Length: 139
Image 1: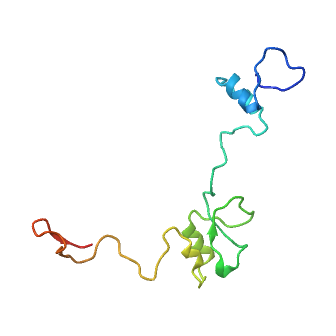
Image 2 (image 1 turned 45 degrees about the vertical axis):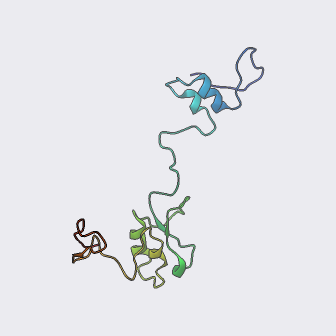
Image 3 (image 1 turned 120 degrees about the vertical axis):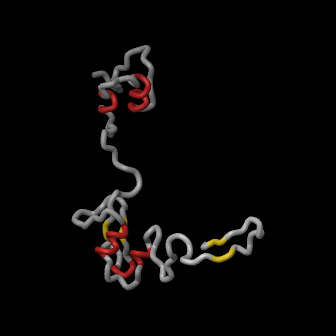
C-alpha cells in the first residue's frame, strides 16, 4: 500500500521526482495494486473521459433556429434530447428548418443534384484509351 509522499523531513538518500506522477511511474511502475496512482489528485480511472466530442448529438438551442445545427461538444447541457447520429438529430430537432443549415453541417450533406451510387445506368465506348486496350465504361 505504499505510494509517493512529500512530507517533511525527507529522509536522506532517497531519490526525488518533480511530481507525484513521476514518482509513481519511476518507483512503483510494477505495482499491481495501483495504490500509488490512486493517491494522485486526479487518479486515472477504468472509464476515462473520451477525447473529442461526445458519442451522441444534441440540438444547439443556444443558436437561432434558422442558423442552428446538431453538435456533440462537451460539456452537454442538461435536459436536452440526444441522438445517435448527427443526421438523426437534424431530422428530429430541425425537420422544418427551411435554411437547411443543420443538414449542411453533415460530413456528407445532401445536395440539390445528388449523384447516384456506382456508375451510370448505361455503358459507352472508351475512345480516350488506345483501341487495343479500350472497352466499354459507365463512369
